[in-house]
Length: 362
Image (cartoon, rainbow, N blue to C red; front, side):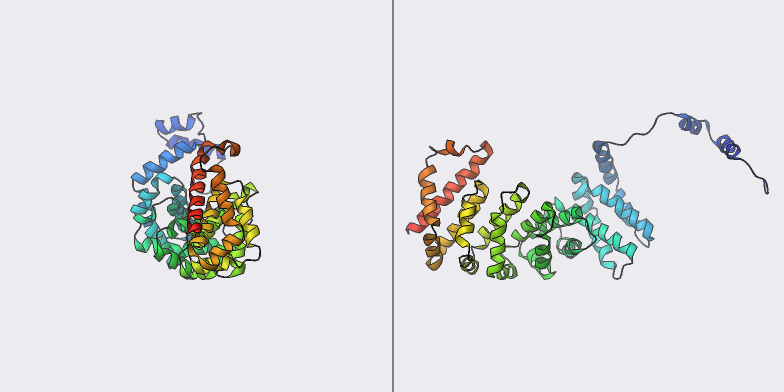
């Protein structure tokens, strides 16, 4: 047919002549594919994981072009959305491979920067719900720097930052080694930056991640600065807006844990509005925040000397006495009208208040 021209209709006819009867039946089938449901997608991802598709995808990254690598990482990202397969994917070496791929990109082009960001996001997805104690040291420590860089990355979305922060929170719960690694990789400044995000979920996740760093020497030193600790007390007091409540609860928890350190506790009582902030938290109406604030008071009283005196002079011990007198036998619980699921935390507040009174009477 060289030099000849054919119409589109003629070309379609020629193509049809080359097809088998089965192919013709498929083409003539009027059935239209509909969008899969979430359940169907999840089922397909589980089957793909069992069939080692993830390992095959990683093999494709060796010497891959930008486009191929981008599509492979996109596929792994979508598979990692299914929580039930994350552990299996890590066992299949996906997390280790992602750490290696991310580390190999020294001076990425603009296209590769996007790919690296997606690699880090995939790592975050895998680590959000994975038990960190099941990870090897190379996996847990190797993932920290990429996750911190993802939080810090200007082009990252709020979702990417949020999931990276959740993963860092998870890793920080492992112990001192991961806490120290987070701090070493400039995690404190990165997390503090994220705490002021306009997105309440990112803000909450960053605050909770910082809470898990309590016990780290550098973080304790940071909290020994009056202005820094005043910021945490301000966050703990900002509970009225529903969007900020979880962040306030996390901040109150951080102060409660950190004031077990005498140096941090001494800084707390130096805050100019110390009494006002403590009273605000005690009068919050939230048993969760009240419980954390009572733990802070207990720390002050048990540490003794000027810390116990500060708790006494600011009326915090008197509050605990009145609280115990009012609610210790459960006769006035109806006045508070707590939800059933709040009774346990309410009883915990009574117990801590009793401990404060006993410690104050020694």
